[in-house]
Length: 115
Image (tube, rainbow, N blue to C red):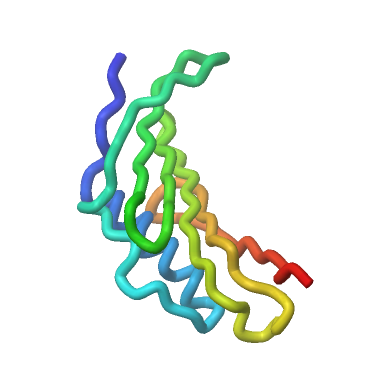
């Protein structure tokens, strides 16, 4: 069985959800990620043998990855790499989203600056 690349409507929803997680922090990554700029590959789960589609965003200032599972679930992560607006010793490494479109939850991944 071959997995199919998700429809642009689904891909755009994932991209918007990633940007929304950044915006919740009062930050912006502009129009990144852009669905039409993603590259795709199929990945086979070694245990279940299910085939998922993975979208990658590479080659610009940030890296991102979204995995589309056969049952409709999505997990995506996109780099932010900006100082946290309220925590001077931390930065926002990335944002993550998960769920089934259009209901996608998410959170920011924070890291501390090296001292």
